[in-house]
Image 1 (tube, rainbow, N blue to C red):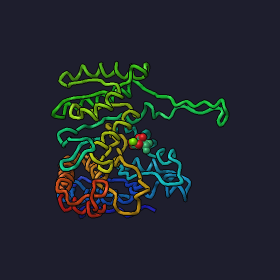
Image 2: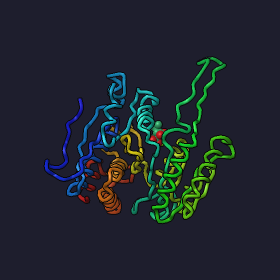
Image 3: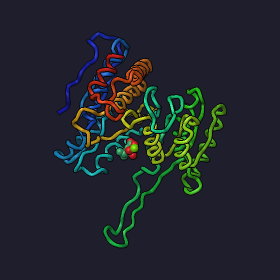
Length: 365
Ligand code: IPM
Ligand code: MG
């Protein structure tokens, strides 16, 4: 059954109450999410944010027993929350498509059409790119999260025969492109460098990406102060490595964004620190916040996973819920611990445990 509901503040508090559904999921998700909750509780204390966490036991281990990833009425229940805090899904013995299927279903069902992924080299961390410091890598990807190459349209016929055919159809709509590109321009206008790079591939994908470019050109007219450029996605991937400082906000289709954000987090020092927000900007449905790393079965259970990705994702959740101050508090606490350099998990070259790292961040907030 569900875990306990934990009110953050005593009754009578004037805080705004937010109901959070927690799906820690599998593997290291179960280790990093409690770390995230502890930091969020500490950071929200004394601010007008009160959180109640409802822990839902869903995921692959649940699937192995119940033959489903979530309860039958799972989506209806999730719809009643203000946000979803997700760890990771994936477990040996459960097909990838099943575990990933739940994430994709939540993103589509709740029209979380923006996948927002900051990619920053935090001061004190070492990038695998030689001679790059924090000033060089500070990007955020606005990934289309509801259609494109991930639409799920297609099928297979003549399965297992020599005539077998598979089709995976990319679905691009004017509406879907317009809203993601507009979100990206709006975000770019709030950032100091005011730059937007669009990932295209209109030389080869002559239908979908030509539409993408045309729609982006239209939206651009509403944002004359933004330095807008488009790059073929292959060249953009290379540019992230060779000239990361020339990139600020990126806007991408679903699959392109998936690939580019792994590059972005890898050059930021570790996949373990990168957060992601799946946002429904209309707020008709709950948004979902998750570290971008997976369940990492190889290190699961050892208590050594880096909790920063989950903690940062939690900060994005608080920001989305209207608490920019709490977000900033969490981020600067992460920055201070990382810059201090003494407490590092193994992925950052240290020997600290998940708990030690989380405790250090709690101390800082
Ligand atoms: C991500 C993941 C997912 C994606 C998988 C698990 C379906 O790689 O969030 O980047 O491709 O979107
Ligand atoms: Mg990915």
